[in-house]
Image (cartoon, rainbow, N blue to C red; front, side, top):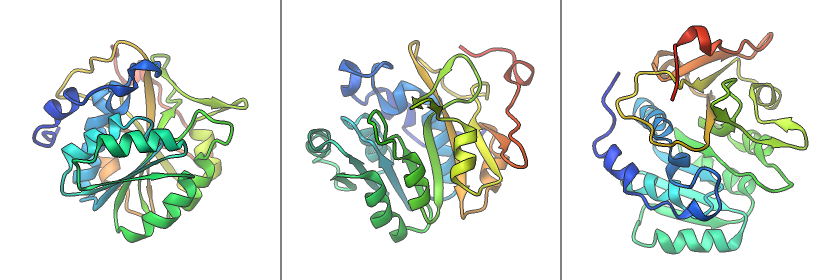
Length: 243
């Protein structure tokens, strides 16, 4: 496995967890799961991404981490709640590479993604009645897309459900035309331990109008065929255990 970007461990664990007051995982970048940060880092480097776009910043834990870890990249984020966007904007006022919008994530994706050739897009907008995931996916012309809170089929990892619809590969298959989805592999040989002892959530990735070679070759990603039928991994036979 390739070494992670310089300073990732320090940046990750020194980012304040402002979300601790409300979030079930206690807040922190990527829900305080460093394995997700390592997956994201491998994709940003592997695809030579030219921007990072996040939806659903809440109080900016993940946004601050991304802004500090990738100071040469534009980091664009948003939240539909004005007070959260305002808080995050103030929090990151010393990070000139960051832009924080207040408003609908789908509209912001439409207005920002086309300006970049290979953005990393992290979709984490949820909690409210109007779940924007389908519209967000439709609004992205190209990019490496990371979807948070996905059911990866392992009981250790949580996921979101809205109006009886789980956030799972079936939903993603119905909302996109990609043939293969990639799940973050909880059993990969990560260089750093995950210190999250509370809720962890699954993450899914897709290459939208980009070549998926980096994802196919990356040891942290498990491919899932979406068509003609979905074939989920058997984690018990794939690896021995996850903490």
